[in-house]
Image (cartoon, rainbow, N blue to C red; front, side):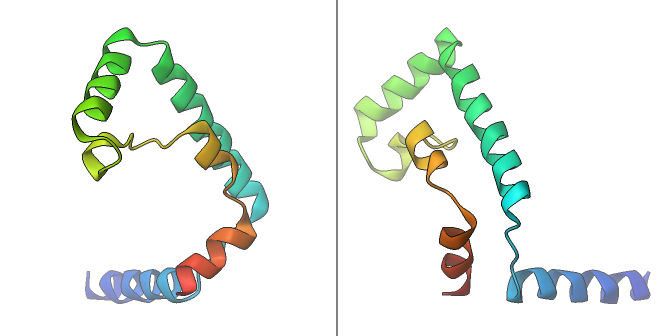
Length: 87
């Protein structure tokens, strides 16, 4: 068990200290996220809650959708993500 912990800690530190954003993986995840946003629009209750949160909280954190917007998800590209993680 201890050896697994050490390996896991090394892996976690590598991921955090040297993030990698392969374009193909990022594109695949972007498509999954966009599909989830579009599917949410088809759900009446979900849309109602989203509108209520936006009306109550505006642009504060509670008023924002955790999935983001189609516009915000579309701009994510590897050159934008990598420097963000390094700062």
